[in-house]
Length: 277
Image (cartoon, rainbow, N blue to C red; front, side, top):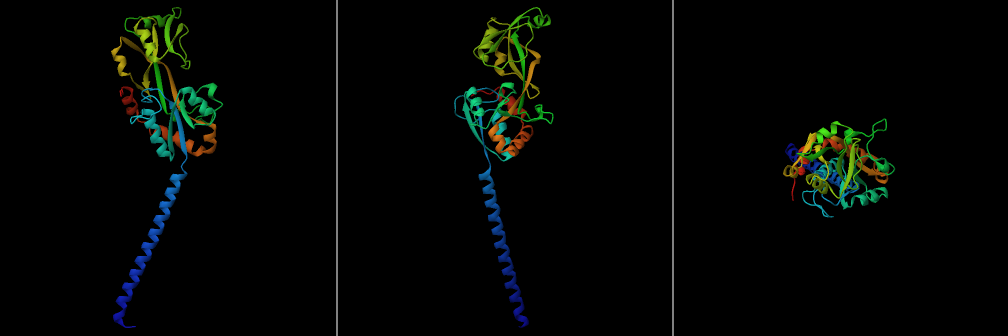
């Protein structure tokens, strides 16, 4: 071997080394790509059921369609699901149908307040002592009494022996009311407000606090009513899983509960409180 041939051999060796490095890099990249694709394909799908009626700020639009601006809760849930490595499928049905489908494991999750009647088929986050873990609730709401501006309801509340009438929509879960409350059925929240405005009842309850922030729906400003703070009742809404989904994917359920407070955007909830299509 001559000295003149050494540079050429070194150059060939470098080219071969570069070629082998590129081959190894390409193989590794393909393996990683395939692993990522497999991970995406293996990510479970969470079928979430929610009411097919508009309920702002949580759900926008009515019917089975999902509008481009779907509501604060749907946006919140999408972010949390993405962070948790879950696919999300949305189903809109009448509320009682959602509950029935969760009980029969035909949908995977819904959002509700804790109720003893649903305890046998719902799974929600718990503390070590078995009580609900409110730090992992998806949202919190407060309800205030709303009365006509010229109705002396605050004075009535100071005397337990003076009854007052309160309109409450049919089907709404009971909440603690003062002992001197006389409940009157209403067809909807709008009907309950109408009864107050028409002076046929003393009051109704309206959303007045969201995730710890005082809030008031814009349309209430057009009515001759006042709200009484602090809220009469505060409750947490929990993402509840079916027994079937939780048994199959307990680790994903835990990730999603953990992601909910991390992805909460309080301003988005306030935006949808005054949203109009």
